[in-house]
Amino acid sequence: MEPTSLVARVLAGDQDAERELYDTHVDRVYRLVYRMVGDGELAADYTQDTFIRTFERLAGFRGESALSTWITSIAISVVYNGQRKVKRLRAREIDLEHADRLATPSREGDPDLKLKLAAAIEELPTGYRTVFLMHDVEGFTHLEIGSALGIQEGTSKAQLSRARAKLRQQLAQYAGDLAS
Amino acid sequence: MMDDREDRLDNLIRDAARDYHAPPATPRAEMWEAIRASREAARTEVPPLVTRPARSPLRLVFGIAALLVLGIAIGRLTVPSRGSTPAAPAQSSVATAPEAAAAPAQQRARGEVAAKVATDDHLTQVETFLTEFGTPTAATDFSAQAQDLLTDTRLLLDSKRVVDPRTRKLLEDLELVLAQIATLDPREKNRDRDLIADGLAQSHLRTRLRNAIPAGSAIRL
Image 1 (cartoon, chains in turn brown, yellow):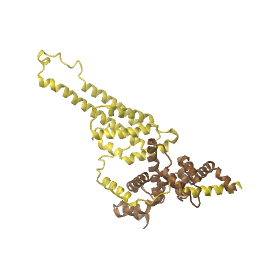
Image 2: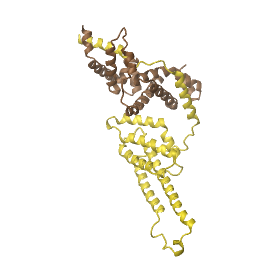
Image 3: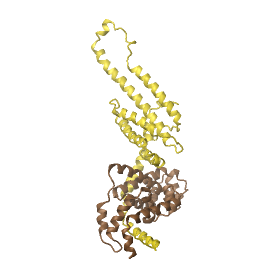
Image 4: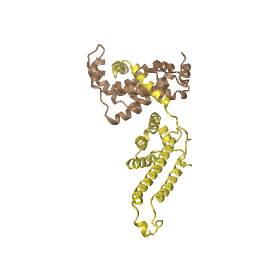
């Protein structure tokens, strides 16, 4: 179904259409939100808020960007806003359970690298971190990232480049291993 | 050679990053239940009766001035002046018991009316301020105004005369928002403003404010 007719059905009060819109986009939203917050409960809360606000604001969707990008921009706003409150309550910590999981040896990975990488990603400035996770981990294009974050495509590329440089700097010890 | 090594390190980082906060299966059904319940609640919510247009900062200044005048007027009405108290005739100084009992009750009632008027006017001011704040083109520095309103909000919260639990909850929520605005980081003002505006929309704070302000109590500017 064309996104515009699905939107029209939701706006007309069709509750099946609401569910359809949710089913179409929820995985992408939840994955990104989870990557950003690393906590199942928070990720579920933020995803719910994202869709509640999506439905509330849908009348204002003008189709200037893809519906998925528009929903992503709402998700990012919800996460940023929520995380500011969470940060006030507790300093962000690396999920130990997750760290244990990472410590399990795998074919492609050095567990030590993954732990150090997790810490390095946590330390990235919020904007760099978001662009890195969206592009290099979740596969968003710079055009989509630009639209969702309200920045130029070139800015998204520049932020990704700086994020990678910071991560390389943090993980410089592994560069020596690669050279050998 | 260096570029090649950087590329290989980037690839290594990208591969390793796939395990960073790796998402589990999406809990679709649970989340949908919560969304559906919230949508149902929103459908049954009473819409605000009046939508007021955005007001300019100049009007806000006049509003504050009008509130001051109103405050003085209330003060004069509620505190009995020495001149207006008649040199009590002998029989009134030996007041009957019911009259004596009625005096503190009357004073308390006056105090409650004054507190209600002050609260309504304060809420009107905050509503005007938040409407201004939500205007995308507004370029005013809001921090100082938010600080003033925050002080008044805290005074009202500290007052024992504001007893209505809904009003107190509203004042508590306003305190949080005003504190956020008052401490806006000038370097990231635009982004923070958007976040606060989003938070406002999420909590339906302006709608609750409009519903709390009785018709006709707004300062007409």
